[in-house]
Image (cartoon, rainbow over all chains, first blue to last red; front, side, top):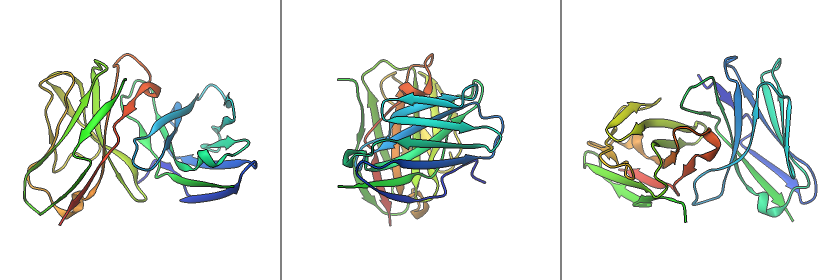
Length: 112
Length: 114
């Protein structure tokens, strides 16, 4: 049973518009969440994170929102650029756990 | 340049033929791990190592072995590969005292077992 779910395998948006990537989790013990970006033929790279004590974290064009009651987080990219086209993974951990639990990923395509 | 390297990048093999995927990092990191990425399942941890000679199972360790004789190297061994081990494999490393954000991933090894 997957504890972190990304229900949309793919998403296409127009350049300059907002991209919204969603992630749901089932384990209420998770207290730290991360987004990774992955280009083809490369390993994932860290993008942005959020602690469960916050409901929003911003870094430039990227904002992550956390709704603990709904066990839902989302990544907003504004404005979207063609270089943002990649697979985005949501990941979660709890306490001092050493490992991350990853979602299945969403392929974002930003059309010029 | 800080990096994690994996070799080979692509490998086609047959069932039962032992293989090793090497992983090396140049950042003096204590913590290293192996993941596999499969469609619809995301990244799942196979094994991890907190330091030299210290290894432990992740979520999907069956059919794999690892060793950590040196701090920089963390090879993944498939003693008798089977078709269900066809996957994309990533090695990763980070300082044991830092957050997960500073985890560096290798470029991946795509394995096909016939």
